[in-house]
Amino acid sequence: MQVTVHAAQRFLERVMSKTNYTCQDVGMAIELLEKTLRDVVVTSKVKHFVLPGFKDFRVVFRENTAITIIPKDQK
Image 1: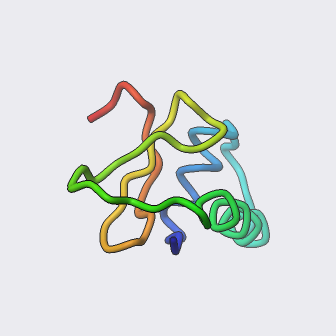
Image 2: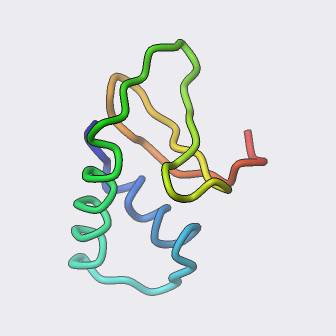
């Protein structure tokens, strides 16, 4: 699964609680998320799933691309 810059930024902000980050941080977040989501196979029409390793967050995706990270209780 591919990961957008937006998803990486939301991962840093929401999951890692970072308010300031560099382009290098975003790049490393993309790499981490792509490794984490590498083996995820989405077989349903639901457009989100729990972020592996972070049960309180969900990945919102479209066409095999993670587009954002949201808290689990947010719709």
